[in-house]
Image 1 (cartoon, rainbow, N blue to C red):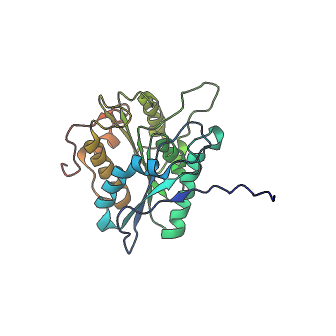
Image 2 (cartoon, rainbow, N blue to C red):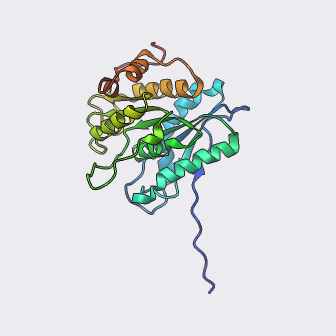
Length: 252
């Protein structure tokens, strides 16, 4: 029997949320969570479910602006050490956006391990902003180099983390934000008090904050006062900004 070559795995973009506009002027790439180590292919249904609410919210908010929103379907579920597979797939997706839509601004919006992928791939020339929700980051090790931040220079960056997150340590995202802020003033971080990894307790407020930030970053809309204050405030104030109950981008 002839040996069958192993198929090459490729990342891909999911279908757009809502109808695709006739003229695309901005793109959000949704980066689902993943595992620290895994060679398995992610389930498309599970991946889409984790970012569906965010994708729908952003697609509605940016419909009149020409926004397109895609989920990135990874080749592997795992980050896999130095391979950084999820970050590589996020960078591939940004390349694919350029191929499909031309020179339009891209926001990488990730959850959990997808948040780390967005932060790591944020240096892609098409990316102008990164949204990281409860990003998974490695424990700091004096024998290993810290998670890089220089690639975020020139990008607008928002990190959102629940203070009761038992899966991804919020203190690690604060430390990364503090290092990034030294190189890039357009970095802010919001804390969702008493919320966990899924940010479900204040889900509406988190989605409203994401909409506010992404529409401002991609299309120059005026952002809300809390976001302006967080970007302008020196550390640690702008990196421990509390997300108020009832937050809405319409309340400026």
